[in-house]
Image (cartoon, rainbow, N blue to C red; front, side):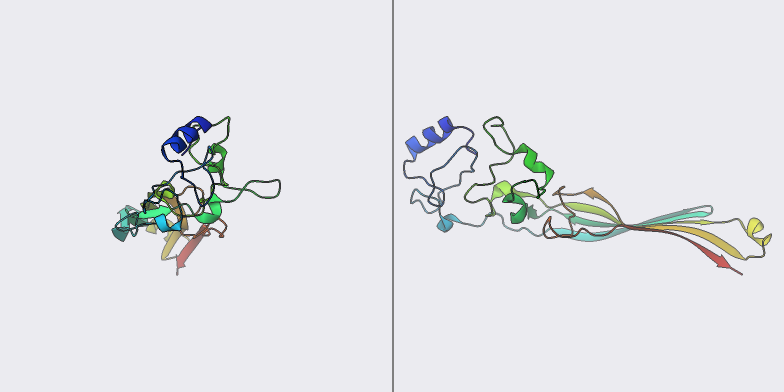
Length: 207
């Protein structure tokens, strides 16, 4: 990222023709490698960034245990490796009185915040995928949890039942590792409605 006008001037002194999609670089914009060697950055400078972006392992883990009258079952979804990108809608949206944006934009470049993590939203290639916007795609999520508690036989026989079991279950309970914390990892864009978390409590009775 160009952090200051002095940095821009020094870069242009060595690369006088350098432009970003026809615009002279400005502080707070990202800079890109001139792949085709013509001295300017255009769509012709796009190239492959990674050998692969898909995770190298996608699996589910089933865990469970029983202790006396309590049983627990847990399903965890795991995606290991790969790459995911900040979605384009997130990058180019400016906050306003009537529009919210993800919280990471509080650390965008301004003259008072030149060490910001993120560039200005008006960067000419803000919507174009680059290695700046790519992060490790590892995702770990607790998909389902079920906890059961069976009442002692002596207790339930007194009330004329053969079995009685209390059950708590939850779906989409917790994302342990989320590569893009501003949105649900199962959604394409931060504008999409997130996956619903559901919880329920029930009782199973046997006569």
